[in-house]
Length: 219
Picture 1 (cartoon, rainbow, N blue to C red):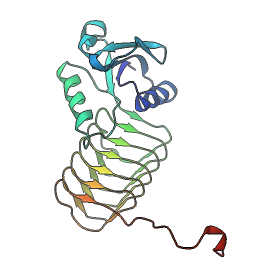
Picture 2: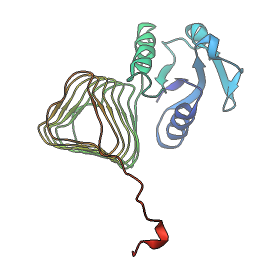
Picture 3: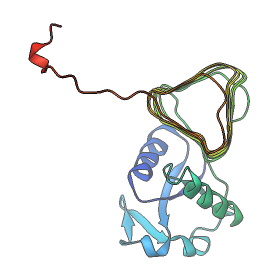
Picture 4: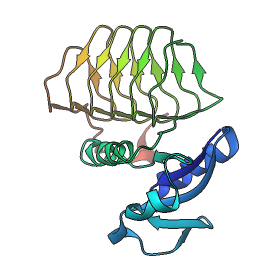
């Protein structure tokens, strides 16, 4: 059990607080953001402090931290704060939902957020600072590298190797044995059938509006 300071004061921070408070041994005691972005003294009825002041008020030998940020700039913003917190000596805790089917016996990395209804099969590896939103499938012998963000209902098949700083959109599918190069962006609904290139953007087919109105369609 740890008393935790959460970096962030937005939706992901409020969700992290919800999950930690209801489904973990950890207790969120405060929030922090960079000084120029702090516009209040509290968040969710707890102190909101400048990140620059955190070590003095919540020293790393007594408190842990969780970085609750999004996938902005291909996860590099979250990764930067992850590195900054570690440099200050903080332990970075992870949240793994009790409603996740966690079958791998390999350790989960730090500062991970793994929500409900994920299935993580045996022999899979989850790196550091990884977000798995709800409802994903991570196949056997697959690896998700550091600083990745997997949205919802993504299928990662077996023996897939996902490099660092990747983003996988809703309902994406990754074929077995595929390697996603670092900083690959996979769009919503895309099916990846072969290896990707670094910094590549892979988009699925988009829906188009039919010429007939819905009341003329025979369902």
